[in-house]
Length: 258
Ligand SMILES: Nc1ncnc2c1ncn2[C@@H]1O[C@H](COP(=O)(O)OP(=O)(O)OP(=O)(O)O)[C@@H](O)[C@H]1O
Image 1: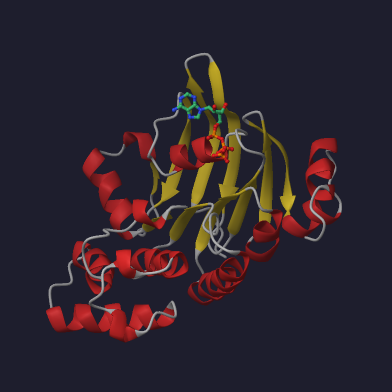
Image 2 (image 1 turned 135 degrees about the vertical axis):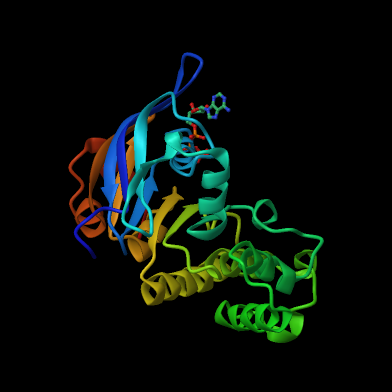
């Protein structure tokens, strides 16, 4: 980890009319750090994630991102084109439903290759070779490279979405319930794969999940949200083994084995 945060989040709030989406959220994310945002349905996790990833405009507050040249830039002050470029290159966003993050009617290889083209790669042979390598890394047989994701199982689609996101060597990945909606055995395999990739690539990640086991396996630090507010945060093992807030204690005790 270097001595400057990758992301600085200050007092982010988002209101939907009078309803609170999230309120006064502040934290720093360091290079190589994985942060889990946990809480029950409706606690504001997705709202927060979308504000950070510029998919939603916060009502107030600021998010600064350290660019590759070291400069801190406030996201709301970037042009739409700059934000889109970040999103296509330096960031990744893994959706719970792979269909939201993939193009279902183009081949698996093109799904991965497209992101490479966004960073300037033009050589067809190189693109295909890199796409094939990435399919292998996410445990999809290379002979499926010309198949469309709609011919894939849910777990394969999710792994393809991950490959599509990681091929450009992003520095920051946002994940919204990445293992949600999958069978338990498929989830376990995906978690294992994600953990290996995040470690190998030294990625920073913000993972929204209601599943404390996912937070335990993947994250260094976690934030617990309730009614749009962060009520507890700390190192993941500390929060799960020694929760301070009554609400966190309830969340932890409602899970048999974390
Ligand atoms: N587009 C919207 N319009 C109005 N209210 C919204 C909108 N999106 C979310 N909310 C409200 O904001 C609050 C936080 O919702 P959010 O979806 O961020 O929570 P969550 O923790 O991600 O829940 P889930 O796990 O079910 O997605 C809830 O009260 C929700 O009803």
